[in-house]
Image 1 (cartoon, rainbow, N blue to C red):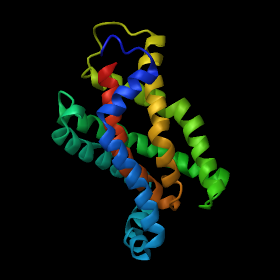
Image 2: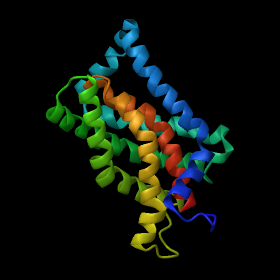
Image 3: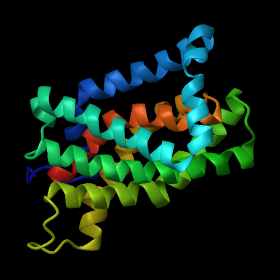
Image 4: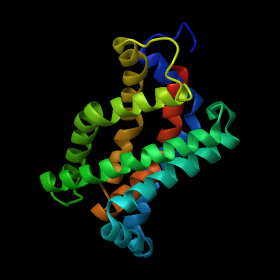
Length: 223
């Protein structure tokens, strides 16, 4: 990592600049998905089999959905977008597919908790309430620290030997950049995710998380 990039904001901004295109695509995709789903009934009908699979297979479906989106799509980005390409793109894609599949199971469980707390409505108050709890409680306490640790290890090629990393160094250079950028990308993404019916939320999350997986690799590599 460049020695003159010290603050979490600077680290995060370096990653944003390197991955500006995936981020913009993600924002646009989130808005288009919500608009098309509610304005084109035939699209909602086409997604019904996916909703049925998620309802029937639960955790397995959540794992597969997130694993595919966070492995296959980022790998394509690595191949064609040099600034985002890690040293071992195929290994990185497989590793994060497995990791994100596990995160998909956890997030799918949390979506159920959110529905129990706030209901199944898709009005603005319900959607925003779920987004706030997701981003400022669930993400702060669970997703961001877990992702930061995984992507730092992934960025080092799963080699844990070498320089010892202090707790505060990890917080400043990995956790906080991950958290800040998660808010940057996750807030609009969550608004889209929670606008969909419960059975489709994990599918939408997996699709939108593909760009986030690319960003996390950049943070881990710059640690």
